[in-house]
Image (cartoon, rainbow, N blue to C red; front, side, top):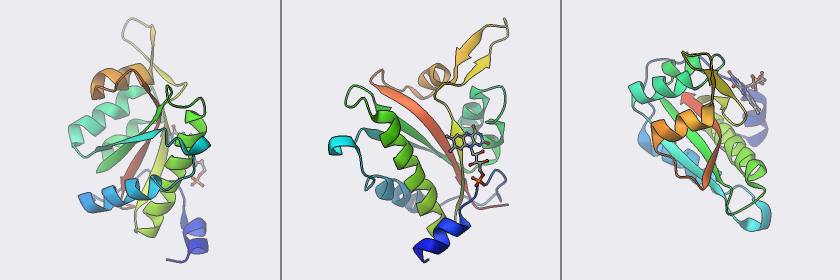
Length: 157
Ligand SMILES: Cc1cc2nc3c(=O)[nH]c(=O)nc-3n(C[C@H](O)[C@H](O)[C@H](O)COP(=O)(O)O)c2cc1C
């Protein structure tokens, strides 16, 4: 697909067909994201591919709203940043996430960015929990890594 067509076609997709995304395509999205520029070429971004439906649905519970549609997505990519490696991890990870979204269009896939950084959820006792802390426990994310967003991936429904 022509690059300008990719740019024009990209839009947020929050409803998906039930079709699974082949693993090699998800790997290609990550490969493309790894070509993204980064401050001092530090490559601080990290990625986790999620394919387990129950786990993706649990990730969707990280916020009170804006993330629940994830339970419909056949796949999701968690975009992380090594904050020990670079104070520019947010910028680097945002570019990486954007590369994933554009690459997905070129591969016939739909995506939607779900924000994690700075967002939270309400616990049963009324207190707040950062979405990042919830995901850290759920996914076993190491302390050095911060979480920018989760990209829902699938075929547009
Ligand atoms: C930094 C950022 C955070 C976003 N967070 C969410 C989110 O938490 N949930 C969601 O459904 N969409 C989220 N989006 C998607 C935007 O709502 C969407 O890109 C915007 O409405 C424009 O629509 P379009 O992507 O179809 O052009 C986010 C997008 C960006 C760039």
